[in-house]
Image (tube, rainbow, N blue to C red; front, side):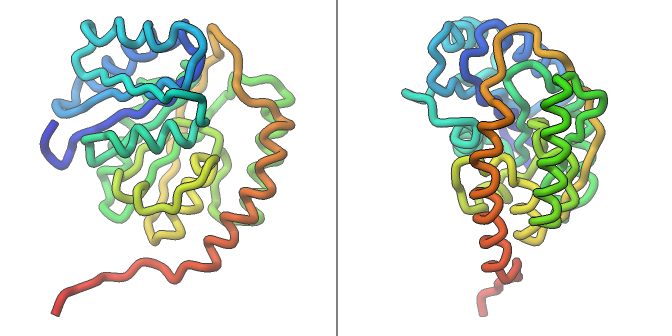
Length: 241
């Protein structure tokens, strides 16, 4: 891949053997208009046939790359691994459960490319195909997080995002960082845009998260991100004299 328009789609997955095949093909179809692109799946220590299913797809999808963690390290580490390995200047992430619609990828790319000062475009799920309890928990969590961080986001849980690779690599890494990308990208002086995207029901497999599990880590992470916001003096131009 060459050129400033190169795209790398990064998809962290764990125990999604039934979803990765259809999802990879949909991503490839969505990127058909992008001459320079790659699709990177990160198998985060799956215990089922996810790795084998992905390896079997490589002969069908030439742009597909498959990376594997030796043990489960979490979604944020999977994204970080994929971005570090990526060759594209622009990164697109989406969840591996098939609920994000790859057909929305071109919309995010258009929004990101339209303005050089935009560092990230985040999807906002419409007509969410989740349980009522999960939708309520997400709504309350987003309100609390926004009150703490002031990032203006209404759906930080949407995995479908497009951002500039270097903007991501400039961020301080920690586990669960994927939930705070909007606040942290804003902290670095970039602007963020929001685009409505589709949301689909999960067809196979089971969610790796629970409402209670998310709550346990959220408060501590929020305090940490708030500390990072207060300890940053913003971007500046640097020149050599």
